[in-house]
Image 1 (cartoon, rainbow, N blue to C red):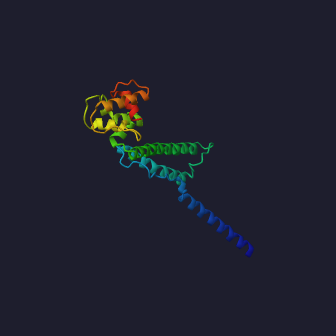
Image 2 (cartoon, helix red, strand yellow):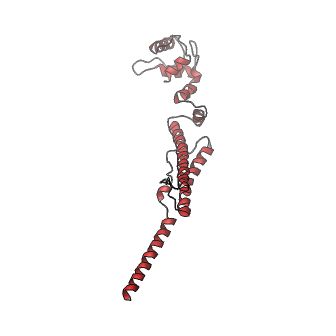
Image 3 (cartoon, rainbow, N blue to C red):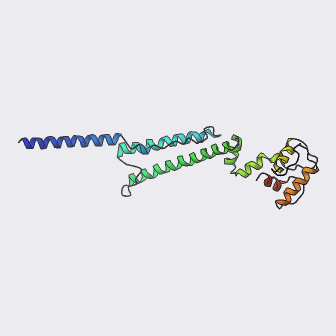
Length: 209
């Protein structure tokens, strides 16, 4: 009789522990569900909606996964091909992560562009006009186009700076004189361009390459 009582008590203890374990497991989902926010994004991105969507999606990833764990005991990290609800939940979870990653990559690239000296307006042009870094540099130096003999000012000074090398330099005086024209012709010849002595589009792209 005493042995039977001990067995009953043991069964009761095991059942209680099992129930508590399942209860604790249900209400304490894996921390791996949380999406780790990047510390390298541009928090001053020109389109605030993108930044807002990134944070919103990132937070929803963990929230969505935990709700399925608590309510349906579905672990979205591991797909169950035999259960349609589980399969669909995992697909949605992965789509949310993909969206968050896409937004993160965009914001991180923006931060990198700005660290390289590009402005918010230039970053906007980069994304919205599908430009390259070379395109941005061309736009940045567009004011140098059509410079030729007789020109004066800051634009000529910038051109002279681009033409100068460590081993051989010309005066940076902001005056497009014969010295500057000859240096420009030499540069054009060395880059397979027609030596016009004027800054045309091909010459400018070569200068800022």
